[in-house]
Image 1 (tube, rainbow, N blue to C red):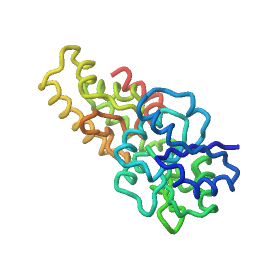
Image 2: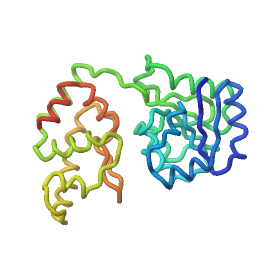
Image 3: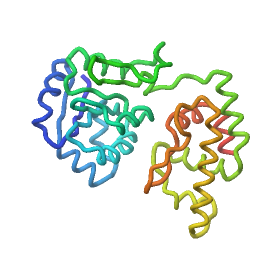
Image 4: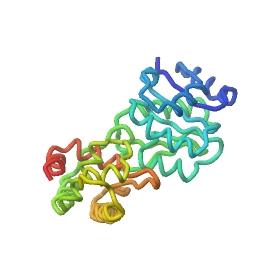
Length: 260
């Protein structure tokens, strides 16, 4: 049996979705306490290892989702956002950046939920070229390649090799720092200190900003669908999950960054 965790601020608001999932033989745990604990402690909890799916309720506001999603990506979970009637701009952005695996509607039928959860377990198929798949006539969306990426074609491989070869030493160092951090955000101060190994000043921060911009521009020549580096204002930088995955899976690309 698969386990589903619903994080919510009101467990009574989840009765309908809980009943639908239980009808599909999913073991459902619905909790507002777990949401509060996770948000406050921000530490690794073995609790989350018991679940294959986590659903973020529509009762959770967008600012909290922005904090929760990067943390949840540290676990082997399919992260699903549940909405009442429409997909917000932020939810759509998170789906594109593969920080969310799917978005479901509160009105989705049992059949639609069944297909959504089943699709998240499958290997990508001939739908890989699509940005996402519409699961119902409402709002539900899913990234068909959210769990596993396709192998680079020779042409794509050459594009990424070209970009990495033309990165400066500082640009390569920044990319490597972000790759080591994985899906986590790295503050601008941390990156500056690792590059220049001295107290961070305004000159360092300005230089970092311009260097990150150059890296983004260089990767625009590749097939990467989004920016190579994500800027999270007031927090720092994070590498594009797709770029991270491609570099880690390709020995040549990874070697270029590591030895740069």
